[in-house]
Length: 219
Image 1 (cartoon, one colour):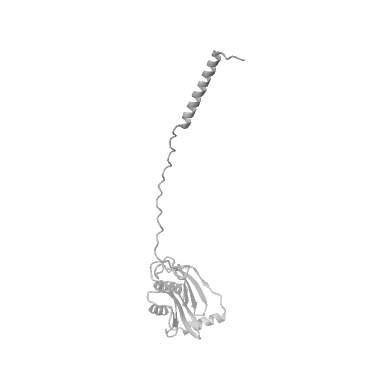
Image 2: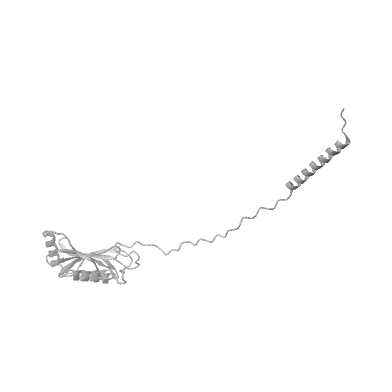
């Protein structure tokens, strides 16, 4: 039987005490109270404003300016005044001619005007709305002898011109904007057919007898 010396016993005892002390230190560090985690920063979110509404949206009738809330042509003039200006400019550009058609184009930015000379030749012009300025040059429309004869016949039969026809339409639709007016034939009669947008932005059609100015149809 091996005997352990007192010196060896004391060495083991000291070593055990050191180990126990290390365990206590480790246990104390592990069981201590941990600081609370840092709170996440609070980000303020600005309220998003609801889109503004301006009431029911309407779609402009063909020939009417997109941003127009009333039958007013570009340039600040009423539609019928602008029609007269454009028609007068076209007639001046083609001397000795008669207006047979005028129509608003490109959302009211231009007037497309057709006039015929005394021999029945048709000329087409673009006129800037609001200013009466001719855009480009008059274009001669290709037409045979039959077309020219038809133009001459209608011009001769019409006893009221485009201005008088426009005035008749104005009387039927006060405050309206005429978007198209043309000399045409209907049931053997020569007539003026007009499209007009009224103050409620509703498109209406009016037909007038070109010989005596009677209203033949209107809706």
